[in-house]
Image (cartoon, rainbow, N blue to C red):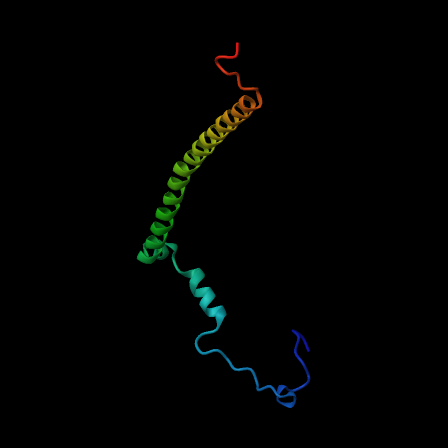
Length: 107
């Protein structure tokens, strides 16, 4: 027995015999596909349409990335600088509040 065959009949353990798939065997289909000229694949309109959709979506993604990344960096840097200026202003105001207030007529 070679190839993992069993001596126990499948019907004795509750399984039916394996059925054969309809149509030509896989070996025949594979040899037909390998023997076919490659020009047929290149002339197939569905293949070129799929390639065109792939290229279109890829270009759209690259274009979005080229716009999004610099824009995101710019907005992040400007937001950080605004935040830093605001914090410095808050610190300055706190320091001014901590100093004693001088009245204009007390000197």
